[in-house]
Image (cartoon, rainbow, N blue to C red; front, side):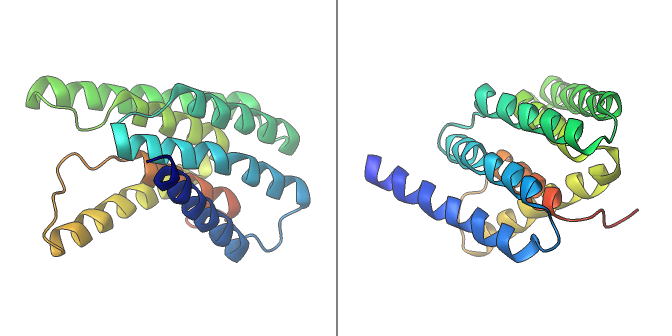
Length: 177
């Protein structure tokens, strides 16, 4: 069991590193170090969410910490980034809670809302549309592949797609603005 988790963590970590290497042209060393600092936490939260449908708060806190350091370094306006993150968290938490009350089961958990909020602090308001779009497209594609292969898709965790979307967009320039 431990060997399986270790090999999955290593494979996912290498996937993050390879993806970052493909899209990181033009970044300074400090930005690349910020991106690299995110990888262990994003891998851990992805594996935990896949196994237990739970996003560890420590991972979200680490993303938030790296986000604040990055925003302070870049001079983008920490207050705007924090307001964006808090707003995204509040709106997505409310939507998830409403879904639960109406449907009787969780569709978007509070961990997902917290991770989206931390990602919004990291990426800022300018990348928010593509952050939500890329994360959602990743989930939709995974569900389509699993359904095509006749596998169960109920309860597919959203955290790994949020995490990877955040990581990729951190290294890319905004696409829409």
